[in-house]
Image (cartoon, rainbow, N blue to C red; front, side, top):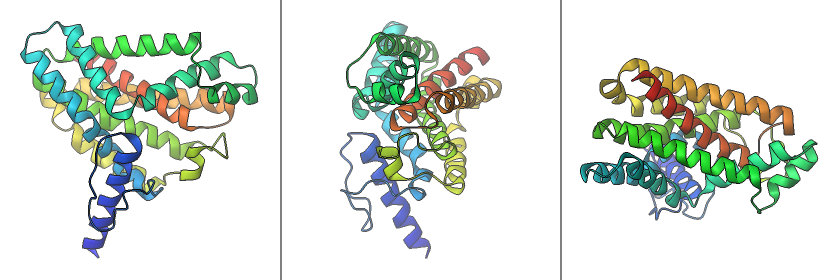
Length: 263
C-alpha cells in the first residue's frame, strides 16, 4: 500500500513538472505516464514541490552570479530569466492576459474574450515590465547572503505554486471549456498536504533572514492571492488558467517584498 502511494506521488510529481515546465523529466516510476496531464485533485499536493524543483536552476545561477560579484540587479535579472525559461513564460503569459482582460474589459464576457487574445496590450506590457523589475531587484537584494538568496528563490517557487493551487481550489471555473476546468480542481486535502510540504521547504529560511521576515513573506503572498482572487471573482466570476498563472507571479513578488520588509 505504501509503495503504491509513493509510486502515485512520483507519477503526480512527474506530470506536474511536465505540465508547468519544459524541463526534460524522465519517467518517475512505473505508474508515471509521461504523456498524461496532472491528475487533479490528487496531483495538487505535489505542485509546490514541482515549483521548488523548477526554481532550482535559477537558484544555482543566482549563486554563481553572486559569487562572481556581479551587480545586484544583474544577479536578479539572471535569476528571473532562469525562472522564466524553464516554464516557457507560462505564468507571465497568464499575468499579461489577466492584466489586459481584467483592466481593459467592461463586462465579464469581454474580459474573458480579451484574455484569450494572444496579443499584448498596454496593461500587459506594464505588468510584465514591473513584475520583472520588481522580482529582479528583490532577488538581487536577497543574494547579499548567498544562502538566503538560494532559499528565497526555492521557497518562492514552492510558496507561489501553493498560493496558485489554493486559489484554484477556492474559486469556481470562470470558463467551463478552459484547460483549468478540464483538469478539475484541487481538493482541500491535497492543498493541505502541499502546504505542509511548502512549510518544510521554507524551513531553512528563518535561520538566514529571520523568522519575522519569513512570516511576513508568507502573509504577503497569501494576501496577494486572496486579493487577486477576490478581483477575479468580481470581474469574471472565478478563475481561469490565466488567473492562476498571474497568481503565481503575484504571490512570488509579494513573498519577496515581505522578506525584504522583515529582514
